Length: 117
Image: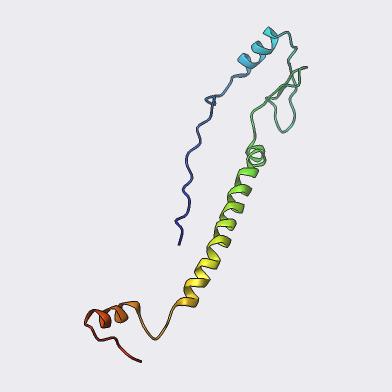
């Protein structure tokens, strides 16, 4: 049976870090944009910018939605691995001979007397 692939850790190209809102606002103002506070009931810390930029603290539900595709891909990959392993498992089950074990056959040949029956 094939050994399952091991997932390797992914390293981001740019280190992820939390950007404080003050830094985000200043960066947009330096670029000539006009950021403004746009709080919502769900996200009172939200800021928008006329360039289309958005700064917000994600709620747990938003984090789940943002990364749902990763969970789906992991689940689909696991199903594909199981499907690929199933025919191999069926073949091993079909080839087994219940009346003789491999070890007893090998012992008979090692002594020069093959077993019959």
